Length: 373
Ligand SMILES: [Zn+2]
Image (cartoon, rainbow, N blue to C red; front, side, top):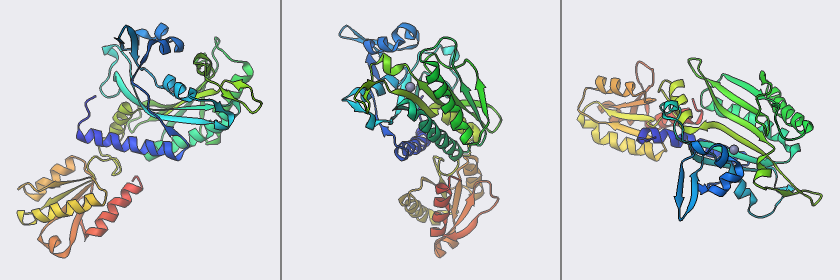
């Protein structure tokens, strides 16, 4: 993707919000390299089964691949030093950029790209901690989707397939944990029998957008296999070395795709907290041009993303054009406003402005941002 200034500003809002989600929910943010050695991908099984889909490169007679997923990197970080049961659950989060060599026919605008970035987290925990982790994750995911303006969701649990690893007892425990966490949050659960991966069951969280299309974004995948494959272990209370369970989890999934869904959901009219430009300040005649710049500087100092429109066009035209850009607030200054220290505030969709003191306008916009209205 080429991210232009406004698109990248929107991206930053999503990323910074999700970074707070990591910080406020016991995750430690990490960052791994983009290119990793062939040997690692042999251990994960990718070199054998997924090589067609990886971008491969070579240096000094060693082969490398651009990472198609972030999990192995997080396991390598986990494996630095000895981990104890006291360290668990250990949660790593990354804005992990992945590349997958998808056939060009499978690509679809911003929705499906070859290079994408996930809010990708991995939780290393014991079997007994799966339930609490799933509970917390489900509550968190519901809050995040609500903040982004989505209300309709579908919750699907994929259970044990015929061919699988791990004991039936372990599968029952994990499947129950997933189903229970959804039931506790009071939602309807759809079961897909036999649709789980061979290494564990999962929940798929599917969003419905404003026109009813469905998008699977969030996942909670239990994994009984990865720690074994990459030889990750912790020292338990009894002094024995054991394998942690790995929970793969993403909330928004691919940020590229999620931003595409956001644009569709809001039809481009982003809530103020996400809008690339939150307010535009316009003058009525040249006489107020200087004052417009001063006011814009004050608004920026108050933390708002502000543009100015001091073109020598009629104010009606400026309002129409800025409204077409779906900017949440159009602020207008004429001689009267300059004299009184006021400004006319026109919220998106309103047919006329309301004159108020500048400080009141700032508070109004800041409040809408804080409320994610
Ligand atoms: Zn993963």
